[in-house]
Image 1 (cartoon, protein in one colour):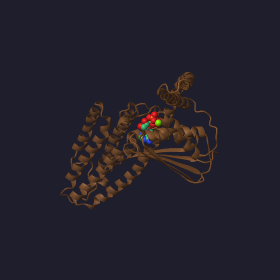
Image 2 (image 1 turned 45 degrees about the horizontal axis):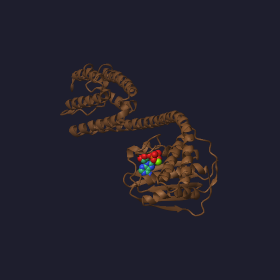
Image 3 (image 1 turned 45 degrees about the vertical axis):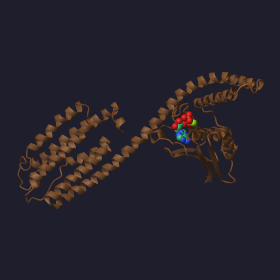
Image 4 (image 1 turned 135 degrees about the vertical axis):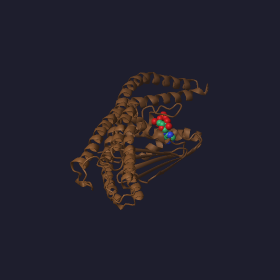
Length: 411
Ligand code: ADP
Ligand code: MG
């Protein structure tokens, strides 16, 4: 939230709200007093028309007006977010002193509750600030409790209850605003992500296309070389492996550039997973990792693009392997429930820090020295195209759980 607050557009919004608040505050404050003390003073006990002499008397108006230049000065200094708090605290202090001066030692029953207090509550949703809401709610209720205790007057219950009801209403409005803003923000983020992907996609398509052809001849010649001169050096497998790596990066790039049309067919998840495991077996053994698969018996075939799902599991299992340089267990569970397939890939790796979770699947987000940050992006897209869901939960230093839900039948 703090970072958002510095956004110039939001500061303009806060300025608008503060300006409105200031106008209303003074209008409401003075008209209420004008009515109660001058126009309809019947409500007063002594029926005296004119200036309030009790309490702080006229001084209270001077104090209230004096806050304005202070508020303007603070706004000029760039602390616009403080203004609402200054008004609230000043009002509560002044009103507390005023009420105590009037009622302490007097037999008059307590009759307080300036209408301007309602304004404070109503402005909580306008300022869209939960912190301000809690300040106002707790501050005002504390004021009445303090008065009640000091004056030993049960009458304070009335304004406290009214206040509690009003704050309840304000809270509902505030929460609605919050959730509305949150969904707007997420729509905005999604659009931004799409736009970024479009730009990256164009670049990726061009670069990927240019790299692909030379790469396949490079691989072909390397293989040829290896066949012609077997046992001459150990580097051929490494060279081929590295070329494959470049190839898979290029494939990922090409994939995000133009997610191709999916061709659905019936395939067995079990086969897809065991294919993926056979590819990664070498790395698994080298790192001393054990893989355990618990797959429901008699799984139905699933409508999918098996080539792309292989890519998905390859990405996820590779991530799990790469998260466990010191070895450990990978658990793969597959089960079927209500026409949906639940696949869980669990590792005991170094996990993902909380602050990185939202970044997963962003193009090029990686924490690895030679990572590309494309794996989860592609994975996400493929799962989405299969109308599935991908969930990642992780506990740093404990491990990561990747859950995939795939519908068995595509409509
Ligand atoms: P890359 O593997 O190239 O880094 P990915 O998109 O596959 O790109 O993953 C992005 C990042 O997500 C990784 O760099 C890593 O920090 C984190 N990550 C993904 N899966 C795991 C996992 N199973 N355990 C720990 N971190 C993971
Ligand atoms: Mg990866």
